[in-house]
Amino acid sequence: GRATKLLRFLSPLGKSYVGEVVLGTETSTLDAAGDVTATHDMAGTTLAQVQAAAAAFVGDITQIPPMVSAVKVDGRRLHELAREGKEVERAPRLVTISSLEVTAGPSDEPLVFTMGVSCSSGTYVRTLAADLGAALGGGAHLRNLRRTSVGPYLLDDAVPLEQVGPDVVRPMIEAVRHLDRVDVDDETAGAVAVGKVLDRSVLGVGSGDGPWAVVAAGERLLAVYEPFRGDTTKPSLVLPA
Image 1 (tube, helix red, strand yellow):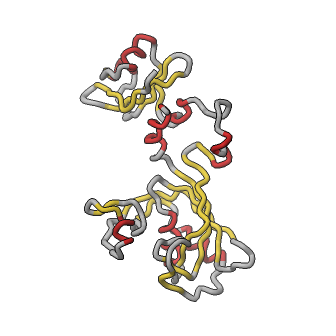
Image 2: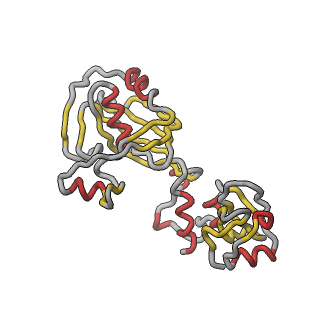
Image 3: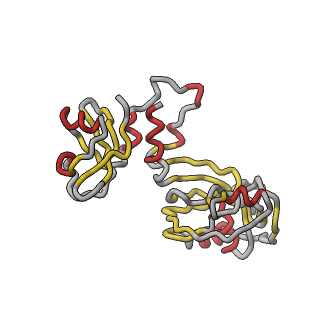
């Protein structure tokens, strides 16, 4: 319903993942779903070596998006070109790896390591795994990837679809807790509800960059506003009453 309109404010949030890096094998998709494209003898690679290599990826890094991805080049999605057997040049992208922890994987698979990563939106964990393998002098691919958080929302808080009901649905305001909040009186709430352009002074946002979650009495989320011309603000999204 109405709450789906708020998804755009969640997608840019940082994310966390857990997956397994399989050393010694490269694939066409950089994960276990692809065809094997190269193999490397990486026997004897130790956990300490993998951890040392992983440390170099923490911080701001550049990644080349994988061919099997939704990124567009000249109006075509890369995965469409990949299905046609084409490979095109892709511009590197800056991403941020906040943390990258590597631990031992299954005891019967010495070349598999568990990787936990917290990163900026737009990070390709598949690419991270492949680049880690290359940094170790060979190659790698990713398997068993799970997203464990989006912003403040944790996998542990998730509810199976069949159990979704009024008792577990959170208020819409929970989706924008990360935004700066503006509480408004009834008069301003009326103007916000119809999507009026408002002076910054009306919202009391000064010279802030926004966006701002505009909230009325009773914790009711009315809209999300953003900077406009000069000292004005405009609605990025107005939620119907």
